[in-house]
Length: 81
Image (cartoon, rainbow, N blue to C red):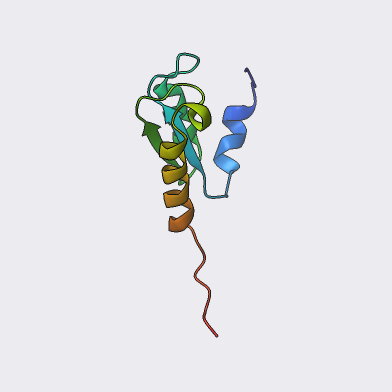
């Protein structure tokens, strides 16, 4: 879990980025997730409540709601024909 060059590469990310973190993650706390989001220009951070390290298993509905909301906020509007 250690990549010495990661901090230098994150500012170059240009893709819309959503960092989702569990408030009960005992492997890496929320400050770690916030640091990732802060290092990526324009990234959004969201803390999931009552969630540990595996939100896709522990709180899948909460995770999906968050991911869909983020995706919808970045959807490209297409003209109707």
